[in-house]
Every structure is written in structure tokens, then in C-alpha cells.
Length: 396
Image (cartoon, rainbow, N blue to C red; front, side):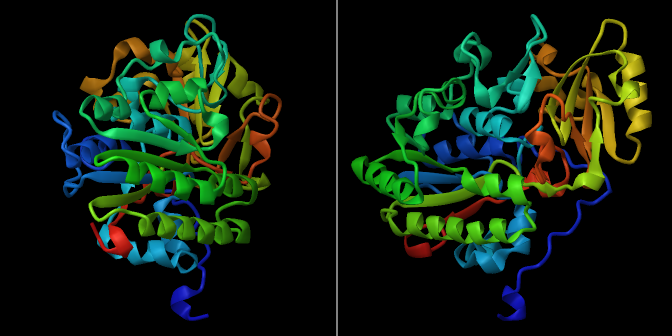
């Protein structure tokens, strides 16, 4: 194995300033509208400057962060061949997590517009913790996320759509919130993803496809990004992307992106924010996830909770009020954030730094034991690729 193809160890997450999503210039919120604009859909902004095409396929690989792809490019020769042309990454939104990112891509709106503020939030009316990926039946997806999706806008303009993903997600609340309007194509293996994409591309003269691959994220959670499991599965993802590129018609383009990256953690870096009495004082509900905690306070306790979390987590997390997060542009440009949606967000937010994991082992037993986590604003989590290829691997 040559030095150029020898896998490198993932660098530790930096302890410097956190990033801010690049909404309006280079984020997942800009990708869907830019693809639609490249397909000729009226009224869509091509912020990313994508070249015109008749058909487009977006492969979103759950957990494929830009930094990790660079560090492990030797395991992904096809994707590596596209990196030089990509030059720089785009960003996810905040939190850098699947639910927020798929809603951001699926609507073309920042989180402050679509209202999917993370893995789990507290329902404003009763404080129940609501998990977006395990949608409860009494929350109407269309009411919770009322934006027209990119799929609906494409179909209205005469561009056929297809959403190609595991059959388990079909018809679920989150799929209806983030991807309604698309034709769902169940595909439970990489082979079925390719077959479904090839059929959808060949069936229509104008087409907009979304292909979702989830397993890389699972290996990252279980074993970490710096693990042979993650690296070897990256090789399978690389083959999937290459096969998708091989079935593109002459007037089609493939985009490869991700919903977030990941940071590896360990027992030494975990802080039990649920069992610490100093952190529990004044807290009504704890939600979010280990890299992006949302803290809902009791009436009148926000100031004290904010101060306590800042003191206890100094150097381990950036702790801000909801208003500070909004003004910092975490959910989109501050003037664009829908204030009616903000009660879904915690009064206090704790965003992990370095390799810190803010765990809640009593109520999140599985999540608290995972190695890989995401949700924060470090480059490892926030930066995602946007790679492009046309037929036979040529750049589009």
C-alpha cells in the first residue's frame, strides 16, 4: 500500500471556534433549490451555480463528513477522484443531525424556517420529548412542517421525482414531513438503490431523484469514524456511487453529499448532564442529543440554568441562550427565523467541543454508549461533501 493510499487516523476535533452553517451560500438548504434550478424549475435559486441538466440524482450518504472522507480517501477511490474538482465542502445546518438535515435538504429552507430543530425536542404544549426519527402518531407532519418540499415543487413544474430509500421509512411521519410529494421507491440494499435509480432515470425525460444510504452512519455510531468498520464500509459506499454514475443517461448528473459528519468519543469524554445535580437544577426537560443538548427550563430559571451550564461545561461545550443561537445564525439568518417555531427550541443550548459527549444514560441508554456522535458545529460534523459527476465518471 502506497503512502498516498494508507488510511490516516482521524484528527481529534479541534478546540477552536465553532463554525456557523453557510445558509444562502453553500449549505444543504441551498442544494435542493440549486438542483431544481439546474433542471429548469422556475423560481428556484441556483446559489451553488450547478450546470443545466435534464435529469439529476442526489445520493445522500448518512454520516459521510468531509473531513473523514479526506482522511480516508484511500478507501474510496471513485469519490477521491471527484474531490479535487469539489475543492471545498458545503455545510449542514444546525443541529448537524439527520432529521434536521433531511428536512433542510427536502424543503430548501434553513431550520428556522422548517422547524425541525434536531433529533429530539420538547413539544411546546406539554413538554413531551418528541423524536423526529421515531415520529409519534399525534403530531401531524404537514402541520409540524408546512413548507412545500422540493419534490412537490419539481412535480408541479413537470419534473418527475423519486425518493429511493429503505422500505421501513415509507409512509412514516418524518418522511411525510420532509419528502412529501415524491414517489417512494423502497430499496433495502445497495443493489436495489442502483436498480431503482436506473429505472427512475430511464422512465422520464426530466427527473429529480433522491437516493438515501444510511449504513455508514450506523458503523460510525457503533465503532467510530476511526475504525476499520467505518473505513471498509466507506469502500462499499464508494462502489455504490460508482455504480450510480455508471447508469446515468447522457443528460443526467449525480451529486454526492451527506447530512453530517461525526466525532469519535469515549468513556473519558462523556459528561452525565442528566445526573449532575448542578446541571439538573431548574431544568424542566432535557432533549437534543449528546453533541447538541437542548435544555428547557422551569419558569424563571433560564438565567440560572444558563450560568450553571456555562460554569460546569467551561472548555467542554459552548453554552448559549436560545436568543443568542438565533442571533448567531445557527438556525438561519436571524431575520428569516420564524419566531412562532422557536418554542420548540431549548431555552439553553449546549454545543459540545472537542470529543465531549453530553450524555443522559438513564433515559438514553443506547445513545449514551455510542462511540460516534454528531450535532455540534465543529468542522468534523458541520462540513459535508458536494461531489459531482456525469456519465462514465466525467465531471458535470
